[in-house]
Image (cartoon, rainbow, N blue to C red; front, side, top):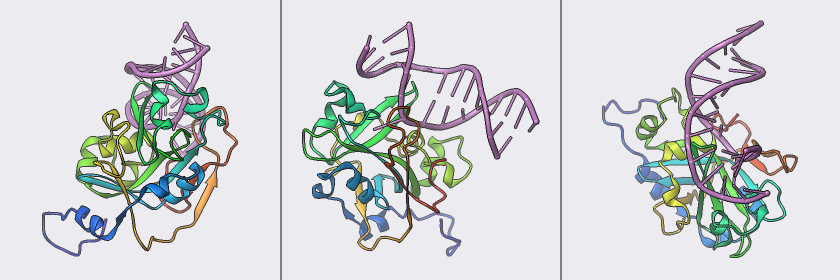
Length: 209
DNA sequence: CAATAGATCATCT
DNA sequence: GATGATCTATTGC
């Protein structure tokens, strides 16, 4: 957050500023190979009012040819959304406890997607701290796939929802801040663990460990 | 600080 | 019945 330029006790929610300075990420951005979409989403802003966070870490999942992807087993009730149109949210429940957010990529019928792994909190921090009682620093609010869904209030009710119409949306700055991008193998998987499909901002403290 | 165990359930074999 | 795109608390150095 910014240093105390104002002495007012009521903190201004910067969500309106973010909305004014950004533009909605459109369908053409999502309807591309998952790797390209992953790169394109780095630095964009994930918004679910009253919260917003800048995407600083993502992973690409390549569909049926990718052993680590849910779609490796083909079309099932769970993976149905992945086979649907791009630009939609795929939210699933894992480890009996956590929800994870993916963005569906590639044309309809091709189940590539991008896992959102970490956010730099930008707006609604007070709400995030309420939801994430264990967090003592901003960097602990959303530095992991389960943490960020918790902090943002993203649940399975948003599975299959459109990122174009909302309420969950992704927006980009016309002139994004420059940060050097690192590439590494994906985290937390057993098969396909050697493929370099994780992208993150090298020096950003909000990236997961 | 690093390592580890426990929580807890949808999905698939 | 086992596994898993995780997080947290706790233990041990």
